[in-house]
Length: 236
Image: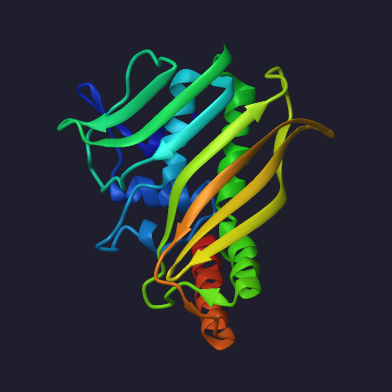
């Protein structure tokens, strides 16, 4: 599988280094969130990588719910069960929980098409900023802290009409941002296609912290810095 270089097996645990997590974010998701920079003191493993590792091991179900309950630091030994139940938790060696997975309905084992779905989802997910979140924040007149941007991946759900797809892709359908004081709850709804046919749908939920009044110049600077990081990386 294409995920082999983004994690390491150590005894009975899965470990993701800062470089592995950052490489996944930048090269697979095209996600340049500063929190996935390997030199960032607040570095955390991309939630999309945890999702991908779980699906790689267990395949997919008609309905899948993923709830993230903690940020995974670099080199944290994670325990992935050899067999997933209806509800499965991913924990570290001390029992601290980071991800809960709920599965409903028939299951479809991992194969080349499931791998394509993983890639399609994480590419879609990696485009949250600036393409989706900036227009949402502008509409509500708020923005994240440009000096310390914090967007937390809280949960994601997938629901399929059928599992025997061969050319999966995702398209954004609609979005919503609810603002309460300095906190925002964003829902990004999407449809899952097999070629031209809709075969499922899903929603990704994000928490935006440290909100403040929208300032166009500050947003422009933040977006420019983000896009510059992308450009520099892809040229190297």
